[in-house]
Each structure stands twice: as structure tokens, then as C-alpha cells.
Image (cartoon, rainbow, N blue to C red; front, top):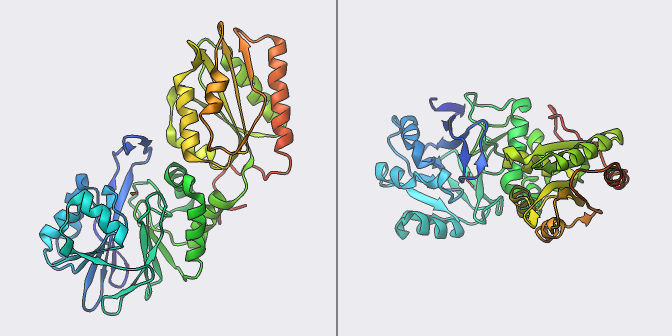
Length: 402
Ligand code: FEO
């Protein structure tokens, strides 16, 4: 992909990574990702906003082959997918300075060992003129790291938002198709930003004073409809959970599976939207995304030796780490002779400020009486969900919040 002109003097230098399948050796990337750098040319100076993962540095340098001079490299975020190629850029453009906030300077010093004289510190709200192009730096802390900032290009009304408002989506088109980008955006929010919802809310409030025509994140396509993106984020970060239950489960010999199926069927009869995910094929992103707005989470686990199945433990650990808005949790499953599956799972989720609903743990193959306990759990969940907004599973094309 070649540099793509966005407005006069502003170019997207997107580096697509179509074949990347895992981020941080953890997060599945079903649609790859991109590392987005941008070039802003003023009448006097030129700035490169972010770089790319060093693994794809040659693509970035392909974009830069006709760029003779860079005066500033704005480092919005010290994580290596955006800053990892800064040393290579400085080799090619030795006169360039790295524009950072103090926290990012600290991180880049320790990660990249850049010399102190290379940095120019900027404060929140400070501006830098390139000549007819004014960069205003906007601190956006804790969109998963503490130092992240964005840049607002005043003359063009473009917000370069870094990770914030982005998506892991490798795409040939410059601009986002809202139907395509909604789910990758939600997945990305869920995976790294959900634990910082109060910071996300504060950052959204901070952006309210800017007139924004384009949102140019550091992953995924550019957004031409800022309202669509900002409404979606408000819904995920601030909105109430939905009339939705996430049932994650693993079954060894079929007993837990019977309980899960009974629960899912009864919940659906009672009008509760259900997402049922088999942990046999664990997709952390899918689980995270479902956690964004599910009011209830039920973990289905058999007993392995004396405790829950390790895959159920992993799911509980992940849910605790991501701090979703979940209001109700429960555990269902089976055991052979004895076990502490419920106690172990319940002890693993202190970050979930949720009511624990009466679990259903049965010995061996569920009896009809056991299944009636599952029905009762479903009825309790449906009662607790009374008054919650419907689940809104389908991506919304025009403004995501409902
Ligand atoms: Fe895309 Fe937090 O780096």
C-alpha cells in the first residue's frame, strides 16, 4: 500500500500485517492488524506521527522513500508496535527529534535506549506549528498504558488517536466501513481498554471540546463518522450491561454439557440473549467481547481432580483481569466424587463486583432434579435482568449506542 493522501499535506502511511494472528503472544487477530503512521507536512517542518512494528519496518520505509526530511517523530505511545522502529527512523533522519510526554520519554529511554538529547517534551494541550499545520497534543492516559497521547491537527480537524478508537483490522481501504469495523473495534476495546473504563470515560469527555472530522487511529482504518465511534465507546465504557448472559463452558464426559444446554435453552425461552462459548477452542477476544455488555456470566466446568477444569480457571482469570460490567455470576458443572470447583472459581474473581447466584454442581450425570435446579438458576437470571436493555448483538450501522 502506498502513502494515501487524507487532506492537503496529510498522508496515511499504513503498514498492514495481514498474516499476524496473535498480539502480545495472547490476543487472537482473526483479521490481522495494521500499524498506522501518518505524515504531516507544514510549510516549514514535517512530522511523522508514530512508526511501525519493527517486523514490518521495510514497509514503513517504502512509504518514506520519497521523504527527504523529517523534523519530528511524534511518539504517541511507547509500545513497540508504534515506537519500535523509531531508532531506524532516526538513523535515516538523524536531525529528527522525538516528541513525547515525560512518561513516554521514560518508557522509550528504557525500551529503546534513545539518547536524552533526541527528545522534545510536550505538555498536555501544548502545540507545535509546522507552518500552516498546528499539532495540539492531547494526553489520553490509560487506554491501556499510562503514557498514551493523541494529536489534534487543528487546521484539518483530524484526531490522531493512537490505540484509542482503533481496531485490529488489516484493510486496504483508507476509510472504515462501519459494518465491517464495528466488531474489530469492540474486540479491541474489550481486550485492552475495558479494565480502564473510568479513564476511557474521562478521555471521551476530554475529546468533547474538539471539532473532529476524521479519527485516525494507530490500528485499523480511518473513521469518517466520528459520532459512530464515540457513541460505540460511550456505550461500551459507560452504558449499562445488557439483557445478555455469557455461558462459557468446558465438558469432559458430557455432564456439564447437558447442564449448559438446559441453561441456555431455558434462558432463551425466558427472553435472555445468550452467548455460549466452548472453551475447548478458547478465543480470548471472543470471550472478552462478550464480556463487554453481558449482565450475567456463567462458567460451566467439570471437576478435574479436586478443582475446576484449567480452561475454566483461565476464563475466570481473564474475566477478573478485564473487569467487565457484569452484575451476576454463577457456576454450573459436575463432579465425580468431590471437589471445590465453585469455591475456587468464586475466589478468583474479586474484581467482578457481581452477585454470585446459587451454583448448580451435580454428581455425575445430571438427574431431572438437577436439571430443575438449572431451570431455577435461569429463572433467577431472567428476573435479575428485568429492565435491562435488549442485547443489541447486531452491529449498528449508524451510531452504535441504542
Ligand atoms: Fe498498539 Fe498499545 O499498542
